[in-house]
Image (cartoon, helix red, strand yellow):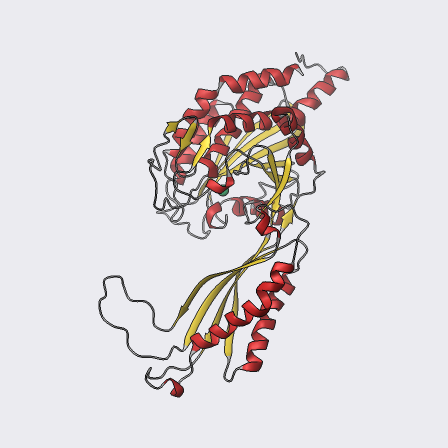
Length: 441
Ligand SMILES: [Zn+2]
């Protein structure tokens, strides 16, 4: 198809622009927490996208977790309408990046280009994906200015801390309602030939066991909360962990180890708090009267969240039957239900076809072990036609010397551009066939 050939040429011709755009985005350190420089990156994107004919809205998520005058949660939504009605394709990228951490040999905010790779915090997760979607949209507009429907590009805050000041806020305001947006692509780093259909569920809870404080030389006069917690962990080892390992999902979760239910013990604190690093004294002898443990349970589409909770309560009941004075409190901290878009959903079929045409091989379907902003688009926006697709290697996310490959960005931009042709240019051709007035070469 001539239009696709023009698009591929356009995208190849924009290689230097794609590199410069990615570097510019990496040089704005949007660390979250605390949520720095959101306004700066939104201003940069506003300049870029208004030059390309997009209408811009900058939206601050007032009152969401972490939002303050010092660290305001700014988001950008850019929209370009075609010249006649049609469907809207929305590319959503988060603009925040996680802490740098240790072990870098490159400047984390330098955007250095070495051997076809651009280095920096957020290079693959996911400023490279954002850049690819912008270049894809701009190249599409150059070859198909008279399209139907609309293209939207959003840059949203706080994905790394739950997305409440970003996609969740926008979804609550109707930005992802099915009457406004019909197709959503989230360019997270899932590799350029994979379509991510969704993610597993999350249940976080804090368990506290209680004891009785007493002098450490006479522990029999008190009751040790840490020993109670030890009994809980022991029972988990005996019954819960083996049971979770037996649960397999039909979801195509990657990596393979995440195709089962998992539980991580996120943290455990008992007794006296640890002293400051510069404190050189000894602790005092006390029997701990409290022990707290945070658990992070990831569950499958085939599981029900009530059962997930019931399994933990069952462990506690068993321990209660064995131990005197066993008292506990279980508090839910966070829950996200699993989500998975159907393989025959329009956006999935479109992107799969574009991957086959661009890469010359079939798309692979995957599900993410952890969650991302699709949860809010599904639950709050009520929009099911959503996937994650973007350049970059998932394993590099959050690591030192994170990078994104320039060729990978170009390839995935081609897939995104072809998808735009499929979804927004086709009606234009068919209206021409029906005798429409648009000249379309
Ligand atoms: Zn991400």
